[in-house]
Length: 74
Image (tube, rainbow, N blue to C red; front, top):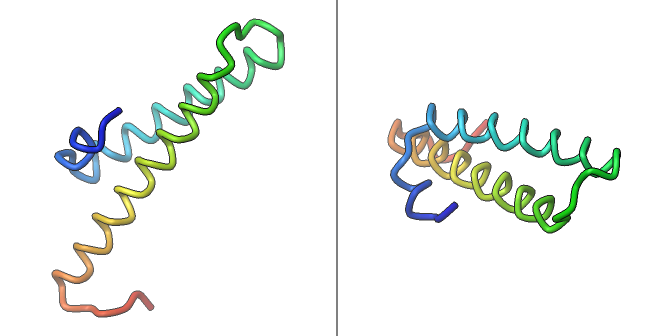
């Protein structure tokens, strides 16, 4: 997943992407627990993608708050 793809998405699409990544992460952890996961690097990639999506969600929330005129989040 590239940064440019995430930057063009709105909050609804980012939240849907996050939900999908969390489901995938759960499936990967279950496969690891049952010794069915062959490519364990998928776990790390998934965690990084989740963090990347969460970062973009936070950035978009902060920019919307600043557009409304609030300087700090209370």
